[in-house]
Image 1 (cartoon, rainbow, N blue to C red):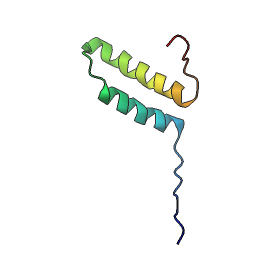
Image 2 (cartoon, rainbow, N blue to C red):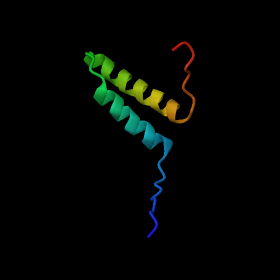
Image 3 (cartoon, one colour):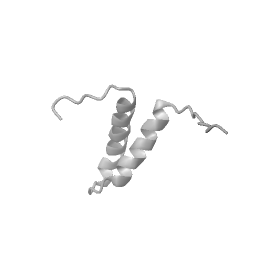
Length: 60
């Protein structure tokens, strides 16, 4: 019997969200209440750019 591989289509947005969850769960840094929204949105935007191949790696 041949091995079967199940292909699951996942959107770039879903991949970005999963990456975002991993990053925000792994980072251990103090953050002020007023910074939370900006931090979360910036982190998701960076993940979304990465999944689309748009992240700028120059100077890093």
